[in-house]
Length: 248
Image (cartoon, rainbow, N blue to C red; front, side, top):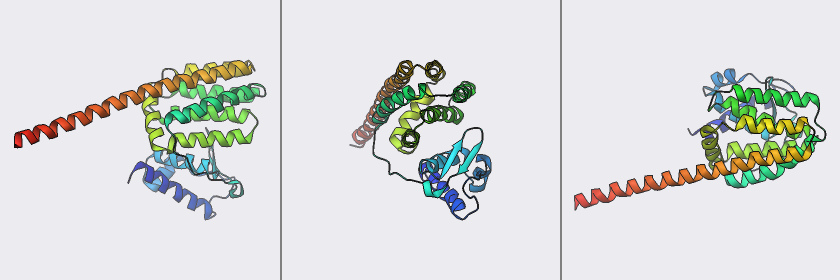
């Protein structure tokens, strides 16, 4: 079974646990390790299942605390559109830059400390691990929360769902994140410093700079992928035509 089908199956199983009443609203779900053992899957699959359920409003992921069941009366699901990695990143640039500017005007010291903690997790996360991605997601989510607008929080979660559930987007983002994590801590630290200074303009520019560089990295990754695909097709054609010539 593909990873996509697998996490969807696990998400359905977790949802069945919730809807059976085993885990009423406000309760904490079992940890990733326990769920992975229960469903005989990797912790990565469990994490993707939980993220998809959070996008539907059925659970809330609290980094460092766990995953908590939400009231189903507030749950809302959205079908995802067909978007490219570039379209998604362009939207994130426009939306999250303004979100950061708004957050700069009302962010609390406690929220600043929360952002500092996520950057520390990014710095400590080994290269090419899910821990770094989790910290990245939490950083952007905390900024949306700091804006004081629940619509921003909902939209941010939906954008992240596009990033993790739309296969072409997920594939290109993964290639970029796995190949280059050197900018992650520095760029997020610049955003944090602008928020700490309560400077909306600086926060907006720092976030725009972050996504502008990401767009360039996505373009580079797509070019490399296109070159590799062309070489593969050329190699396959060469082998096929040479075999035909020998056979003739």
